[in-house]
Image (cartoon, rainbow, N blue to C red):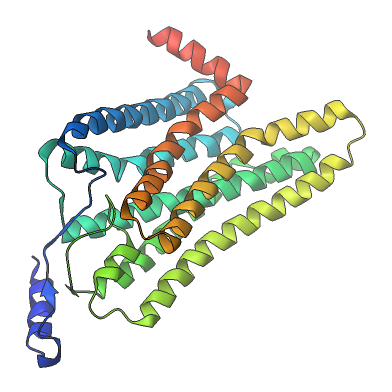
Length: 324
C-alpha cells in the first residue's frame, strides 16, 4: 500500500460517520469457472487464442513492412491497428492465464489502475484508428485524383499521433475518476479484469457526479468516432451509387469490406458487453461477453484482413514460406 493510500485511509477511518469503510491494497478478480477440472482447459484455450492473435497481427505488421507495394496509407493504418490489437489482448489475457496457473485471483491496487489505464489506451486507439481508416477510404473513393496529395505521409503520421494522444487523454480521464476512490465496501470484482465501472460499484462513497462523468466520457469516446465512421460511409455510399458500371461499384465496395467487418465486430461486441452489463445480473454471462470482446475480436482481425485482402494474403504466404 502506498503512502498516499495509507494517509487517505487514515483520514477516512478517523471519520466517525464512515467507520465501516475498508481500505484495500488488492482486489479479487472473478474466475471464468470454479470447476478445478476446467482450469487446464481454459488455460490451454486462452493461451492458444492469445498466441494466434499475437502471431497473426505480427505477421500482418511484418508483411506490410517487408513489401514496398504495401507502403500506402491504408496499410500504414492497418499495421498500427494490428499493433493496437496486440496491446488490446495483452493487457487482460496474460493476467488471466497467470491467475489460472497460480490458482490466484488477486490483483494489486496499482496493478488494477495500470490495467485499466493501458486497456483504455488500446480501446480508444482502436476506436480512433478505425475512424481514421474510414476517412482514408472516403478520400480514396470520393477524391481519388487528390488521394496522394491529401493522404501524405506527414498527415498519416499526424493522424496516428493524434489518435494516440486522444487515447492517452481518455485513459487518464477514467483513471482520474478511479483515483478519487480510496476506500471500498468490498474487494470482489465482477469480472476477470479491472474496469472503472467495477471499481465504482465497490466504492462506499460513489457520487452521481462520478457516474455521470464516467458514462459521459465513454459516450463521447464512443459517439464521436462512430459518427465519423458513419459520415465517411454515408459519403462513400453516395459516391459509389453514382458509379455507372456494376463492376466499378463492386470494386469500390470490396475495398471497404474488411474495414466494415472489423467495425461491426468491434462495436457490436463492445456494445454487447456494456449493454449486457447494464441489463444482465449474471456475472458469468458478463464474463463470457467480455471474453468475446477482449480475446475473440482481436484474434479474428488478422483472418478478416488476410482472407478478404489479396495483397495481404499473398504477402503473408510469401513471408511464411521464407520463414518456414
